[in-house]
Image (cartoon, rainbow, N blue to C red; front, side, top):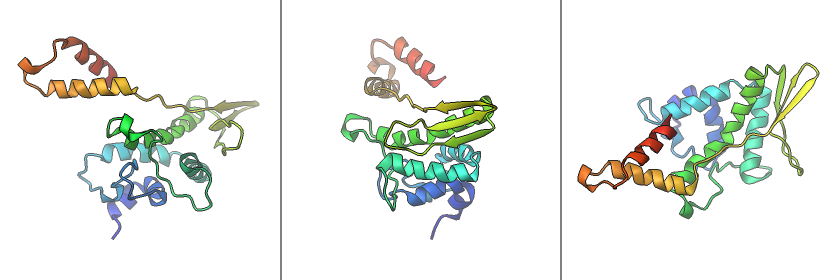
Length: 191
């Protein structure tokens, strides 16, 4: 039986989930259908659902298709794995799973053109063989194109921050000599 809570509260994420490889543990939506109202992951999903709800229906259809093409290439029956392209052996266990959310960030570009640049018309652009920007906005007689990029934490910094978290869980006499720098960097990244 499908989870009615998920379908009712996250309808657009659920659309993407139904196209995805639901059994792949690196899928950023893996286990999505098992969410319950008290789940710790709900805030992240609420955030993306709220973004997705701000896209008009025509652009939503283009975005879903574009998402499937970006992740797997063009297929007649696309199944989205929404997994990171990186080698899981070279990253923390969480990295490939959450890298899939990077593809969702084009919605930030859509909202930027629509709300901040006040474009009357904003559209996701279909991928072509040539390099294609992600979005186009029109404001009066001006046209804007936008390529959305997501900058992720480097492998070295990720490993360092994981070491800091482990270090903070130790007793005071077991901690590293350099205690101030990790805390400063961790606080800076959290802000």
